[in-house]
Amino acid sequence: MNIKELKPKLGKVDIVADLISKDEPRTFDKFGKSGKVGNAQIRDATGECKLTLWNEQCDQVNVGDKIHISNGYADEYKGTLQVSTGKFGTLEVVGKASTAPLMPAKPDEDIKEMSEELESDELEDEYGEADVEEEDV
Image 1 (cartoon, one colour):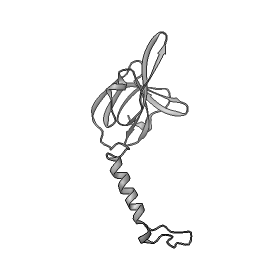
Image 2 (cartoon, rainbow, N blue to C red):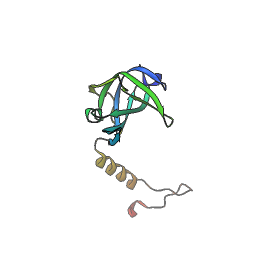
Image 3 (cartoon, rainbow, N blue to C red):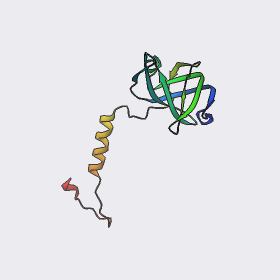
Image 4 (tube, rainbow, N blue to C red):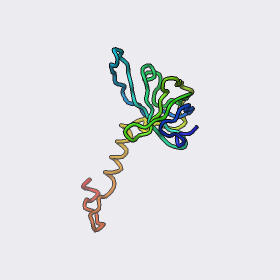
């Protein structure tokens, strides 16, 4: 099954996808029991959707993992499609993601390169003329 095939209220979801982002889990207390819930984002060749992680699943997966959800459940929450293992499904890590995470591997170096490129470019005004001479930079 592919992400593009997911629809709200769909059971028996069997999907393999790359985990591309993961939020910090939050704790909750319900009916006298405490637990953890967290949000993540998964992607396959057909699209992306939200993944809800419950309790030990929050620690089981990391960004860059390829995951397999068996017998899962897809639904919609606040207009956003999401998938989870539900009551009867399972989640397992089956390898490393085939696509790169959204964040750069070395953000500080990437930012430095971008700022150097901006500094070397001449700034143009609305008439296409440079406002700053190269020696002013």
